[in-house]
Length: 189
Image: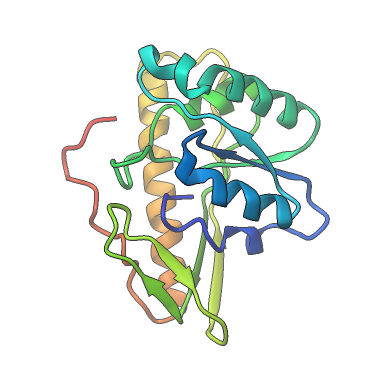
């Protein structure tokens, strides 16, 4: 999923599914972790980014936890983009798929009644009594032996898959994705 569009994503998985979600260690993310626990989702705390920040942000530990969860049959939900770079997928989600052998499914949830915020990611929070749409895109697999060029191609495929899923979800409810067009045309990973 994309940042800012994750508030309703818990409706996309079946009630009996075992789900964990990657949540930043940052203090602002604590509320997300509390809500997820209430929804029966196990928060995995940590985030990635540049190699020099991985230890401080808990990215290495979180990756190990996500790999263990995936090996145990748990679905791991995560945002593909990194903070302050809306709609630009990072390599983290592709690397996790490469290491785990599990596919990436682009997931989008949209509601016709919602609050749209003017935040960096154009966050949306659904309101009750509206129409909703859940779109799950085609699975993407990352070969264990993928080289850097393949990982980059698949990172771009994740971006494209999420853009298509969100575009379709909002189309189904007769709206336009509030975050469409946030990514600069030539933005690198």
